[in-house]
Length: 172
Image (tube, rainbow, N blue to C red; front, side, top):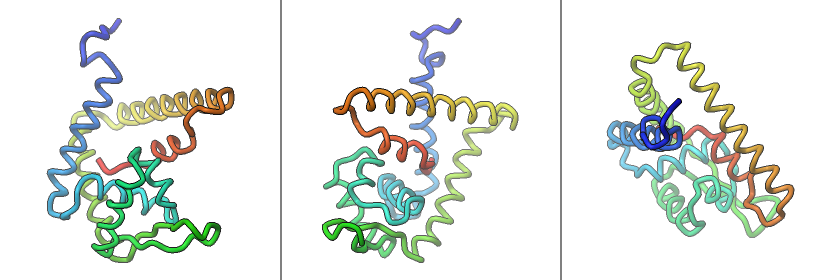
């Protein structure tokens, strides 16, 4: 039986701390890209969800729309993202990565893989598969719980935005 007072035995603490450490490992390697962690994360989300609306991206990143606008402004200025009118809503814009971003993203994904490899050092492939499967099941369980809460509570947060956030693999 694990002790929840021991941080190394507490799943929530471990997941948060491992995420923090993986992000730091990634950013040590990604420093040469000249982008912040938030900019890299936004770029990766746009690449995975081509045509995403800026307001939806804000929900996925769990940041305010004005903060997202500033992130996207910088990425547009760098020639990595472009805004296009949304054909279904003239007030909205959709976001797309550029060819310049495609080349940078290839390098970002290599760096992310190196950070993951560092984190997985000493863990056998079988155990890695079990870990990923268990985390995937936890993800599905929590999404299902949010969806059932939302269906019974019309004022509950939008689980779809959370699903999009968690289903997209973030750079490590």
